Picture 1 (cartoon, rainbow, N blue to C red):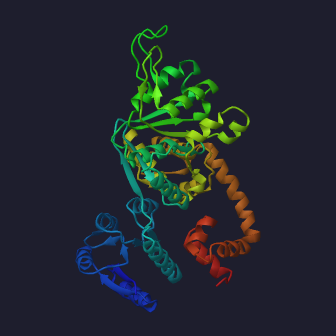
Picture 2 (picture 1 turned 45 degrees about the vertical axis):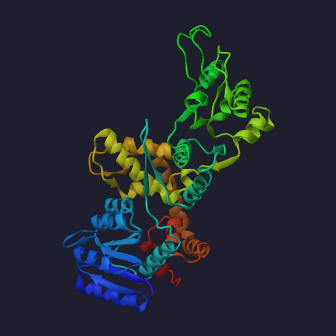
Length: 444
């Protein structure tokens, strides 16, 4: 039987919840303080922790931080103070879920079931921040959505190899971040990572940029220049938007990759280079090959392994994590102390289609942070396009749900195997609202 640690200072409520959980075949230990909870954690092994947000000797957020330092027990926070900023903070620190009192019994059981399911897969839903160290310090988030998990499974698989990787994805989806992650998880991690935007290199000077040149090689060559290939020696060369290279430059690149030797412009000596190549594009390179705009032999050379970065709309479960991350970043850059988003803003975020992906989300949050004069980002700080889309969608949803709400709920419940948490996410409503609708339509 699964064992739960319940931390709640309301004696009557805690005993009631304990009896309820025991009737559902769980073993429950109660603690009325954080201090005693840590004593129990040292003595016993637990599958799940339920903790109140407000406790006599501390709060659930700080307790959550300390628990996550030492183990992977899923933690569910419960509170009467259902503030959006607190929910964001809980997710930031790794809470599995967040429920508010009074509880719906079915909701509590489903949260526990989902948490234990994830634990059994060793895949606890937490946010992981990865700090990149180097010339350009970069932080990024390892998402929790199914699309993000699949992405990082591919990264973990290919990173230790020397295979050339082609990263496909829309603009703003974090292709360079994926490339850096592959490099940092590879055997070349202690050597250079050189990123090159192929779209920013005029074809006339591409040879000099890639392979370098000697002083006096051409008009304006007043100094010796080290090319990107030589700079990336023993490390990783990342060519972003490789589809923008001219056909002539593609031939030069292919020759360098095949021979692993380069010749700086104006030099008669070849330099042997040992690089790993990672490329990225938001174009359909296969179509470019068919149309004769991209060399087929180069395509196969750079595409030993391909990875697709998912769009933000396909990573909906990651949205609040990314939003919170970009908010922290904006606070640092703008010297602000905004702590979260209003429920209305989060709803707009979930409804928007994000054509600019993560880059657009980052820019919008930075703008909103600058405009915000309180502790919470409100709707009026968002650009007009987000508000317009939200209002249009709201109007259509109201009409639709008036006529077809019961049918829609049944259809979604059937699609997710009656998992109310997943159904609520698809319907873009809270679990409590879903349970109320189920009771209203007598769908039990």
